[in-house]
Image 1: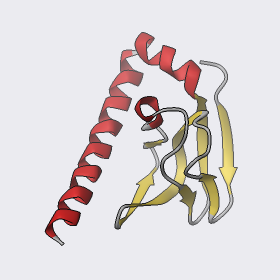
Image 2: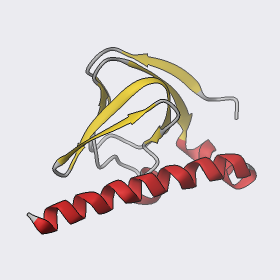
Image 3: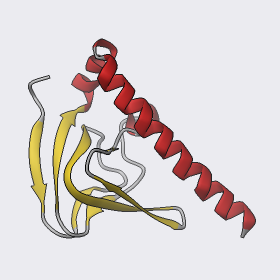
Length: 116
């Protein structure tokens, strides 16, 4: 995959917003990113991935992420990445791990909402 692009984001700069086209998946190289998902503020850091939900959810973002203190991200084109996952077991494993984290966060949000 030679089309990945590294990009720095200023403090509080939006990485993407709900409704934006899902063109990239983002790998966090440094810093943290945050989003409000349901009643929770979710924070992701170096080595984690964001935007991967769009692999399943469709062409547009359903959430909004920003880097509160600035961050550096590697932007991976969605279309190219879909093909690369099938050819690279380590990359597929990384995505499975991140999807499990996302499922756990979603489950916690659902439990919080049902007990309130």
